[in-house]
Length: 452
Image (tube, rainbow, N blue to C red):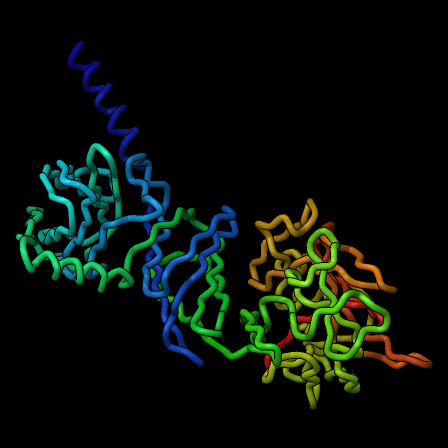
């Protein structure tokens, strides 16, 4: 009976340690278009509302709950593994901050210790060679009385050996300088960065390379390489914008911010912008982008209406207005195409000149995981990567609708007796759909430019 109790206790202990593990996904990155290199990637899990920033040369490991309390990474980790992923053998550079006894443990994904070694190390850099591991991901932990560091490595090639080994190199004399130089040289090489992920989570990836920034939306079901298409999108004031492909259209993934900031006045002067923060207070830093009266945004250009369904939704001569070179103010029909592409009911908004609303397009266009929108931020998922924010508006010298709504100008308008009535598309915190209407040109609204 005592033996049975011990077996039950042992089984329960193991059950608590070994995680319920599903397949992890490794995501690597490359670039095309204006740049083939990726400098950094902002990773946002829009389902869990978590985010990390990693190097573009890193491998993102989207991992399910590990269930091993001790496998936690510190903000600074003086442990470097290269090459990573390895091809059967890799090196570990480790910096000890004092003469100390350390414990080195290597775990597999199930939490099993596959190697344990006790070492005395002197202050400075040390290098270990690892070989004999099977294919998969492993965690290595360096621990002393005063610190604990954990990192990960991947072995992509099965070398056939059943025995794991750590070999400690002699690093005395000039070798110490070589190891230190090697450590510094490899600091920015490829590493594996872990982020919690559950099947079906929506991931927003923003890749950056110099002035270029591209959004890529992903719900992974396998390991893969994400290719960011980098496209120039810089306005005349030097502001660089993230871009995102939605359907067959390329859109700016943030509000236009071109022009010189001025306090709100009526009428608005050419080449200027009005700006407020999420509390409706004038803000020269323009965190929500610029607000423009229609004539100012259009730079006094005549309106264009397009012809309807794509590819005829574009104007024969698109209006650039205050948009960057190679980009233009979208027509009424181009915005209709965006809404139809974003929603679950493709026919909810027809290609016509009727006022109306869609179904759930707004939820897929609105930024979630943010306090910018008032509650309930109805149905917001940001599944398109459009990342709509509540830019509000101006009217008669006053900021309005902050936190509640976002209004976007188009280049299309109808002439009504003395003036134009431009088409506008709107998002709102309390509804899931996109609304379209016509407004007075004296309103100050936002703009999202679309690629020519």
